Structure formats: C-alpha cells, structure tokens
Image 1 (cartoon, rainbow, N blue to C red):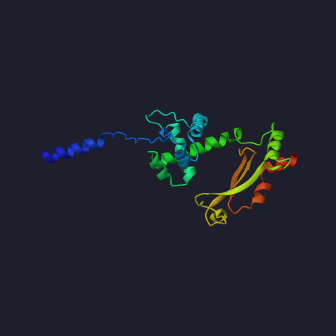
Image 2 (image 1 turned 60 degrees about the vertical axis):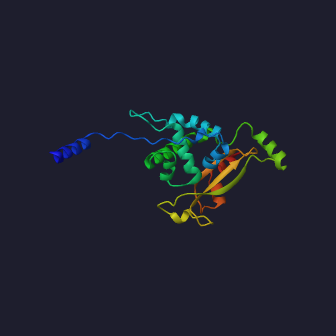
Image 3 (image 1 turned 30 degrees about the vertical axis):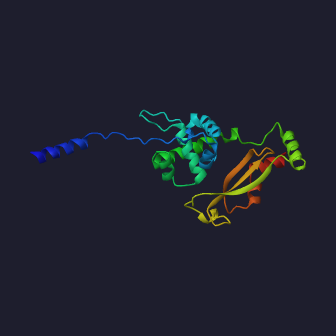
Length: 215
C-alpha cells in the first residue's frame, strides 16, 4: 500500500503544472558611479536612461502573462552585448535572463535604434556655415563640414564569406565609416561593409559621397 501510494503521489505531481520561477533581474543602474557604467556599457547613466525613453515605445512588451522583460533590462542587455561582444548566454546570466530572452532583447533594441537613427544622426542642413567656422577655429582649415575616418569593429565570424571579414590584424570585423563635426558629434555612419573593404571604396560608394558631389 505504501508503494502504491508513493506511485500515485508521483503521478499526481507530474500532472500538476510547475510554478514559474523568475530570476531576479540585476539592475546595475542603481549604482551612482558613471565610471562603472561606462566600463560595462560604454554609456553613462543619463545616456542609458535617455536611450530607454527613446526606444521604449518600440520594445515595451505587452503580454498577458506576468513578469515581462522591462525596457531597462532589454536595453542593458543589448548595450552589454555591443560593448563586450560576448556570448548571449553570458550577457543573459549577468542580467538574470535566459539566452533566448537575451537574443530577443538584442534584436529588438537593435531594430528600434536602427529605425530611429536618422532622427539623430544626419549631416546638418541649417548650420553648415557654423560648422565650417568651428573647424576653422579648431584647425585653421577653411570649408570643412566634417571629418571622416574608418575603424575595425570586431564581430562574430559569419556563416558565409568569412574570409571577407578578416581584417589586417587577423580577426573578424566590419569596417565602419564615421563622420563627425567640430564638436566630435557623429553626423554620418556607414556600417555595412566587411573588414576587407578598402576605405576609399566605402567612401565612393556611400550616400554621403554622392550627396557631397551634388552640393
């Protein structure tokens, strides 16, 4: 009888739904030290909160179940992944979420920021004369509206055409072209080329190059 009762209890426990267990999300924004936040996420506290407000409408999750991922958690997860380029599982462990949740957070934040990028990164139209004056004061060079350069950003090896992404230093990367104004603010970014792409090719095939030729 004791054995039969034990078997019945086991069957009963299997039929009962398991309670959902949620990990405690680590919110590192509680620290007042901007230096630590910059070291972890490459952004200070006020910039992280501003970014959360900008992308909130696009990534806030409205679901019927309890405990959806907060906007702050998603943004911190994505920023940590951008800053360190580590595995999604490690990023998820740091913020108390699973690897699939980390993947969805990174994808969602990336898509949201890409859609809004043109609202914040563009070649100025109305104050080009002011920018040229500022460059003249900084370097005494006339008629300059921006400084352009490129840099190698490490990425995970892609499944296809891996050899195109190997840079001169021997690791997989993308060649990113960036333009900034006299105040070191980004005004244009091109981030679609593999590391083996020459800088001159990137520039001559950019929308900004053709726009400057028209001007």
